[in-house]
Amino acid sequence: MMELDPKLNAAPEQIRHIHIMGICGTGMAALAGMLKASGFTVTGSDSGVYPPMSDFLKGQGIEAASGYGPQNLAPRPDLVIVGNVITRKNPEAQGLAAAAITYLSFPQALAHFFISSRTSLVVTGTHGKTTTSSLLASALHQAGLDPSFMIGGIVREFEANFRLGHGPHFVAEGDEYDTAFFDKGSKFLHYRPQIAIITSVEFDHADIFADLDAIKRSFRKFVALLPKDGLIIAHLDDPNVAEIVADAPCEVQGYGFRPELTWSLADVRADQGMTRFQVRHKGQDWAELAVRMPGRHNCLNSLAVTAVLHRIGLAPAQINTALASFGGVKRRQEVRGVEAGITVIDDFAHHPTAVRETLGALKAAYTNQRLVTVFEPRTNSSRRAIFQQDYVSAFDAADLIVIRRPIPLDNVPTEELFSSEQLAADLRKRGLQALSFGDTDSIIAHLMTILKKGDVVAILSNGGFDNIHSRLLAQLQETIRPN
Image (cartoon, rainbow, N blue to C red):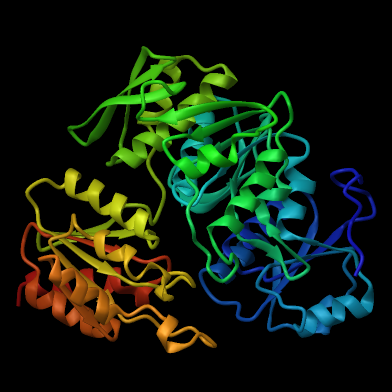
């Protein structure tokens, strides 16, 4: 297959029709919308085209074929963008090879058409990158800088995960996952960073990376991309982050809780629905800021964004206004509803560290209320035994834990798979109330027997979890509906 010459202009005259393989992925659909808004004719294909993504694409005026095949490449497009769900054996990929049509991966296309003409602000890390990049994009917008962005979650302020602005900045969530079947490097290696945030580095994506060292190697390649006049905002409380930025080619500003760092936090406290914290810059009190998100980890995310905004030239008062107005990201500590006095929260947490931080934040935010946690291991990593022991200490903030038995991974030996039954048993040994269930229906039925007014139900999964949130709220509503 041929690849597009990256030296071509952002919108070469010979490219009018762009076809996207795997168009129903969240990022791919967003890219399709951006390309359509930029004047290209856009078509696409996916294994299944159904709501809500089919409605989104139709609303954008984009035709999407259901199912893959060479017939989707007629009429012949000028460029094909290949999603990382596409394998080399995919019939449409084979048709693409036979037709010798120019093609790009998703991150190559995003960089080529949208990032290359702007100042690239890239947020990376094992945890927190969606919230942090959303907060940064929102703050730039609040400050009147009209940013563009592509983020892995729906930003409430825009009700979208992408935006094409007229300002000089592009905010990209830098995913370390692999790019495409023809490029196994991390997506963030294509994003041409000029300012970068690195929130954390831990082992994850066991289907892609062999071990922590493999992840570190990818992050080191990312760090090496920064220009000499660039800037890295690095969470130096994390020793893995400190290690990978040690030989950075540009300035590194550390952030965290240690007072000797360039940016540090102090006096974190909850106050009437806000989390307030003191920011210290180079050892001196700099400003008191506040966000409408609970938890020390969200204060750290806000501190990283503060450092970037300071570099861009915003004053402390502007930064405080921008941070305080941030409405959050869907599926990140999102309250889905309150019925019968019971609050149901949706969160994306799945890595043990993310579970621990999320539950700790929720426990602090909902003081003196019982925290019931429902956990679905769904990622390739969480369904393996690699985190089996790490999860045992991740649920300490919960008062009751319910774990769904995961769908087994194909071609992974049984002894290498995560066991929800074992985790529940290990949690009980720590004095916690924990149960394992084989399916979502059983979980909902059990919750309906034990939930009481004042409870907070935190549902943790990186997937749809069989629509458990809406189903639970509907059943709770039935319990208080008059006869």
